[in-house]
Length: 255
Ligand code: PGA
Image 1 (spheres, rainbow, N blue to C red):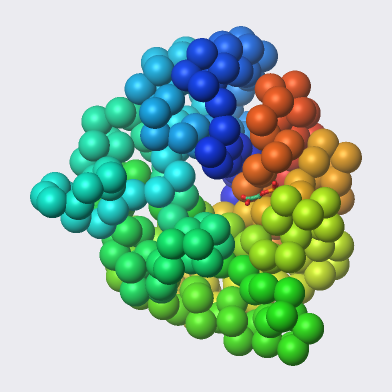
Image 2: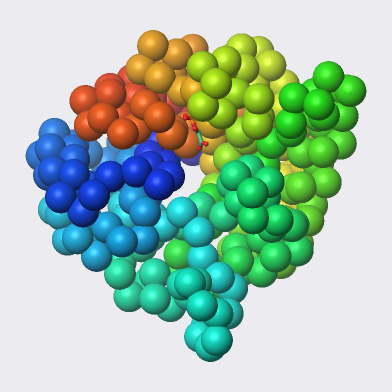
């Protein structure tokens, strides 16, 4: 079965001291819990400080972005090797904010995902439609296209290591969560596409939902057949709130 995976995407929030305080509190409460994968993605500046704290519990460290090249003249960027050096087990790629605000396209995201795997870092590959796409009935076309493009460089024998995050853009940071039924409809479609692309391994790939996930809606989301976890923004900034999401997600999950 697929192990639930709950990930905190802090975006551009927290000082190093605040990040460490959160990690200490979280690590103490989580301990060596093995029935769930908890992942924390601080901004780059806090990775080196948070990593050693999380090493004392079962949670894994993640970055929020990466550049596909190994090294070179890429001012302001960070490479997969550097993230591996910091102990990252996961890294988010293709978040809708990166796609919309920084012009990232599927081909670039595909290179990032493959480069991460080469360093034994699991990519969390984000897809999701805008409100305009949804209202024009283009949701499945858009999500299908993003999946095809962003996963183009994933070798079939490594597919089980990836995580896909479905985040409808209209639900991110808006307080407007997709209903569990709407989310499941798209998750089911993603599962079909993953199985078509990767064969039986498609059934092993975890698909997270993201967009205004909170302690009070995680259970009904996780109860859906193809929702295996969540990528959480706003509600992950508070340790108690994220711990509740991990705890409720774990108990409702299918592992
Ligand atoms: P949100 O963000 O939980 O604040 O809606 C989710 C995300 O963008 O990953």
